[in-house]
Length: 74
Image (cartoon, rainbow, N blue to C red):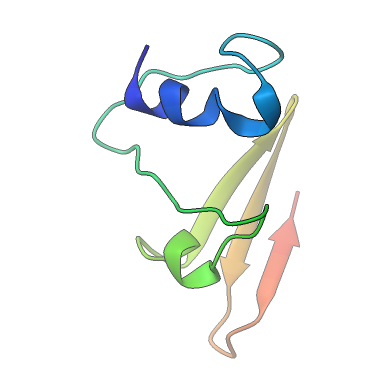
């Protein structure tokens, strides 16, 4: 089990492999702290101004604008 799998296996009492699709850890993986189901956008955008989110079969892009606003597009 990778560090990533180990960390999220404890979320909501879900055991690893139950309803989660795990990707192998590599150099592009990083942990973002979450407190009470809340992320700080500074942590989320620390590597750039664009985050790609996969939700089921759909892919979305979350962008941080020059005016410090968030835009989610499909």
